[in-house]
Image 1 (cartoon, rainbow, N blue to C red):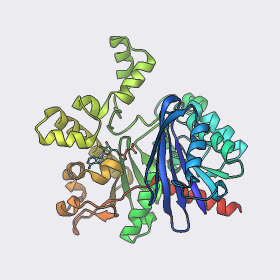
Image 2: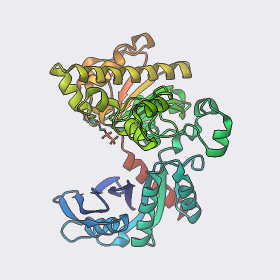
Image 3: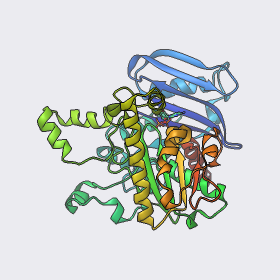
Length: 401
Ligand code: ADP
């Protein structure tokens, strides 16, 4: 079965096409600057030369048309005809309380995703545009939606509610949802497999730290708590997002700096985190490079980032009455030896003992980086959100045949 995976943003569309017989990626690519005159389509077919086209792509519909044309192109294509695509899987950021699992797209599902636009005004409309674009270009193909929030729907009330008037939850569904669910789900399973133990028997903290960052407490194989909340702004310090802060800072800053709601929102989402403290970058590579050159602000940003993550790990260990496994994943988690070392350094009281040599090894494999004596197993697990979307799509479509 051939499956196309789409991840639609408001002005971008990323794609990967899989042959599910061996889960190989036939091609991947992205369309950027949708809506502009100089949109860029980058197509990387496996074993063939990469293509980069600059042209006017005004909407997602045209983006899907252009990318599917490339998929069947004589020179750059990877399939013979559109009919070879059996199903399309979409990443959808917000599934609210309606979606606890991935589902096949129906008119009811589309209606429900539209209803959730209030909760994810930037993300869900883009996913809808992706779905509609596939309907227009590949009308006979089954579509599946995979939600970032679904895995965290197992959180109990005491972790998902905010201590604010209950009427806000009842009326507007203001609660904690959590994101990066496909990744937390996948890496926790991979970690249990590597340790050769049943997932349900392990108390786990998974740290998905990329540009966006969140960690999750996984108990009995299910998400028990996670650091992101109603939106992906809560929790850890991130590249450009603040993460946790005193909510009183919002009205106080609006008053003192005469900021509008949009401005304060943009400050916390786009101009905070590593970027704000270092003063020059949201990229952990650049932060650690500058630290090595003695940059004090970079060091402060790094120390705040790792301290805040360590606090969450401690909190989740307390929440679950212990921890057996700590997992690092995503861009920073998979690659930054220094971040992993700094986070684990002060967790020896909890039985976390990093093996510095193992931590230095660079690899794309699942690997153990704690010592053999360490009570807690620390692992690096490369995440693969597109593959999980492809697998869910494959499974649901097969079941429906
Ligand atoms: P996204 O959240 O956009 O999917 P990624 O998971 O790809 O992001 O993570 C991107 C982040 O990973 C960037 O901040 C980048 O600095 C960081 N990163 C990638 N490689 C390294 C590295 N070798 N050392 C430190 N950070 C790295």
